[in-house]
Image (cartoon, rainbow, N blue to C red; front, side, top):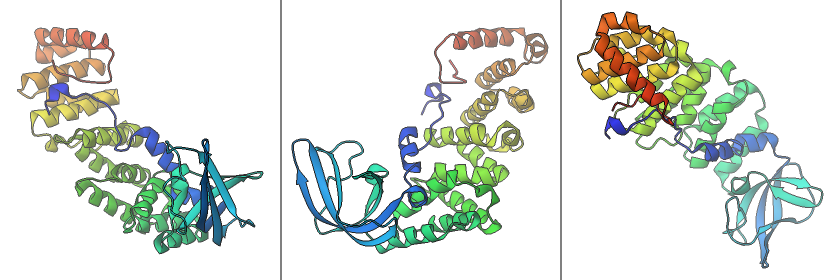
Length: 334
């Protein structure tokens, strides 16, 4: 990808809306907050022009037992959030639901009904029995290597926001870091963003080094954007600037990516690192470093003594021009 078309846009691997829905309906969240959890068998279904109804017979209550057949309804036609379409009569499911007077409602939509498996039931049982904060974090960290994708991905999503994660044991922290390193090496790491978020809460300095590696990824825009997002939004400029991997930035593009991240801190403490990029012979890099120096508060007159009046004037013109454009970018060489 040509760097001229790159911009500083913060992107998490999962779309933000989708991620929020998933975080609110992980197995951990559902077990902790859902009033009723039960293993059922689908006994019958009926459909009208306006609604689809599914009736279940309970076989084992995990939480919040109720009597009688369980009946759920939703509008006809599969749609976003629908959960009852595609179910099979006679098949067993695990339901997470709430009761509003006589009306029953699945919690988490489609994520609140799962085909019954021993693995899912074991995971639910463990989450319901493990209420201690440190033990719950350890349980979820162990689930990161589970063969079931729902259990594995839900554990990562839950850990990113788990209350009290900062008090985790040394073993839990080591597991989190190990899984983060594995996800960084994976071709399609579905839980990379969640593991970065979780690790940033328990070991910001070590996570910063990994996030910087992603931020300087020249080949994968999403990974680069994710690395910057974690550094800037979760780790913070102070820790971020304490681990700047200058030696890793060996090409023009990686140096421009580094400069992008430094500029986005908006911190004068980033100036010493920008100065190291300013001495490079590459004219594009020198120009962008000059623009960044100005944006971080370096006086034009003082900067002119280092790079010359002509370059400072050019940088000021470009900086002003970019400010006038609607932008989601920090540095974009022309």
